[in-house]
Length: 276
Length: 263
Image (cartoon, rainbow over all chains, first blue to last red; front, side, top):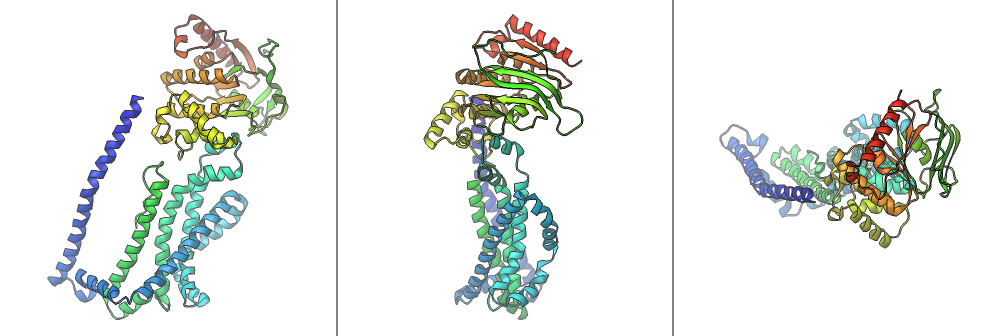
């Protein structure tokens, strides 16, 4: 059919144009970053801003170099990464699991949903000191704090996706003789997958925030402990360098998920990019 | 009221028998009252009637989706049930899985029917080819036009090879040109399947083009008020029929009857 062939050709050329543009976007991004760094460094050099408060790009770079040079950061970095990894995995497993149970059991859902809303409305960060009291200053309390943030995000986004499944797809499958298991595997779960991916990215962001903030309250090791000691010494460059490390870590993991999402959801076009 | 007695040839077994059917949906007012319909095996019957006459409800009773308040309904001698392995229901919307390609969607019906992998792929490819979508077999539904999507839905339905097809206005969202193409494809698929078809529509031309008999339902939900035997020769071509005088006679006859049913 010529109409398909031509629309296919149009789509392909559109994709190529997008690819061609991505190089120029990359250059523009580099320029944007350079301008911001130049303004920052320039403002300090001209005496418009005080380096003791805002530091400078050069000082931050130097701090980063020192942190990695003698490997002093690695035990802390490893602790934080471990906490994020455990909290993220637990959030994903239990969040998706609970969403599936609540989706299939409306009775249970109606009972627990006000409690879920109530717990999710609590400022979990404020519970941080309590978690430390209950679970000690080791990694457990940080995992619990990060999990308490991530679990609800994962649960609510998965449940939202499962709830708005296309009824016609379910009806069609049932009329073809599909079992409940097949309905889940072939209709409900794939339908919820875009919402699950949106949830995964937010969950990662909130789990890392939870872990670092938990460490800042009280911990033996972790980037949050370093952050506390740097800010105690008014080492602004050190604080910014650590925040940069966390941001880069989360960004790297998020792009990994984007890659996976593009592969799994190529039928849906477009990704559920979450700003942040 | 015409007591519909089926095609009355007597040499073909009855496939669907509806006797004294009433449907209430639990309301005091009946949606359907005292409906009698007989459909013979291998027959193509179109149900036509004003909106709200209960034609889709009747189809849903036969599909086992809506319970009968009273009366008896049998399909091949047994009562209706959703998910029966001898019935295929084609919805008004194409209901394609967006994450499966054209081939994957046609295979889906076969998977749910418990057909093995190799046979599945072979049959799906054959039916995708029969609806003229061989060139699009690896495309996702989001890349298809509405007509193409409905062709995939037809291929999925006929690939499973069931003995009764229930169709609820499957072409209502299509433009008239695309409809004619789909009519020919449906006729082609049906003629080689020899299945029984009950086809709900509000399009008179569609009913006459496709069916052996057109049953006109009363607006009040009291069942079949008229029956038009469509004695047009088969195989038919939807496009050629547009220039057929007898087709237009039947059209006029059905239109008059439909108008009377809505009084």
